[in-house]
Amino acid sequence: MKRSFFAVRCDKPLSPLEVSIYRNYRFIHAARIAIAFVLTFLFIRMLNLPDHSWPLITLVVVMGPISYLGNVIPRAFERMAGTLTGAVLGLIALRIEMYSLPLMMVWCGCAAFLCGYLTMSKRPYASLLIGITLAVVSSAPAGDMQTALWRSANIILGCVLAMCFTSIYPQRAFIHWRIQLAAFLNDFSKISATGSSHNVITRPDLTKLHTKILSHVVKMRSLITPVSKEVGIPKSTLEEIQLIIRDMVAVQRFQIDAHWATRGSRFLLVNSRTLADVQEMTQKTLKALALALHEGNPTPIAANSERLNEITEELHDLLNAHEGNEVVESAIHGYVWLSIQLAVQLEKLSVLITNALIEKK
Image (tube, rainbow, N blue to C red; front, top):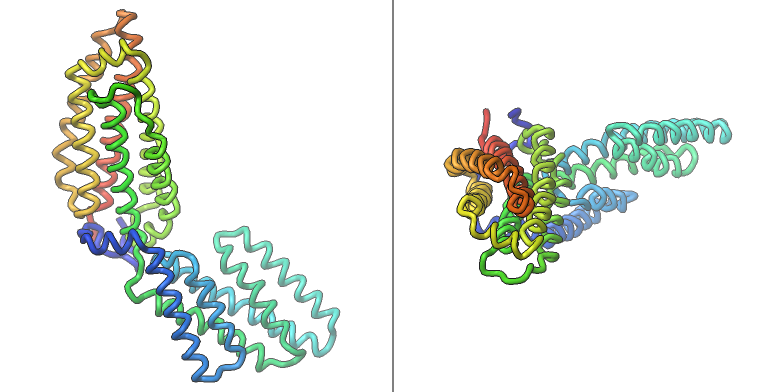
């Protein structure tokens, strides 16, 4: 795992206070922006800078999205790169305007074309800022280079201040990712236990829990890029984890459908000792993974891996034992096959989470 400039300890335990803070990150984020805005306003008012609204506008634009350290600082550098490029193009436009307004329009049109073309590249944010800064600078009075330069300097000042405020107790996307994945595993465990419980007479309504775990999947998806930048985990690894948990949700839904297909099939399923062991081992594995994500210690995960492999083999034997028995096969074949798939996915997920938590120097 290649360590990045923003790297933190992958195996750092999460304290209850830290988990509570990160679960209420929207309030922390809002408070950070409010404090930064007020302090920046006082700073530029004391310095009496011309065009002093631009540092404030830039501050909000840079810090506005969730301020993970892994995406705010690159975004600020992109903004400064776009600002400098746009400022140069704007200054040239102002100089051209002193000689010919139509020629200036042609220049600005070409610059805008360049901006639009580059927004489809790998740096769309920086490209967009080229056009914004071009508009800000070129709208100064004809030949007024001082105003144009001040506007450019103020935008860069806003970027620098945004990075400074963001570096104070920064939000770590990797910690958010660990909390979200652990929450997903805990909720997945609840659904799995409830959906196949021996003590439930009628099929439970799990719609709210399914909606909740899908929201975890969506939130984790948005964290992939900043997590990769912060701790150096390859995006391909994070994408694979994302794919596995999405597949786990689909398998679980089909598994619950198979469990409650008919009264007779459910009777066979709940009285199978092998399937009872599978359910117990699934719960232990899910809890071990969630605990490892909070404690940063993947060691207990390995203890479940060997038993998971053994259970997968037992399920294959169970499938083979009922081949040809149409009554039994129609009742449990689908459920057993889905249990095998879930066991395989849990084994893969265990390996990936272990690798993510092990800090490689």
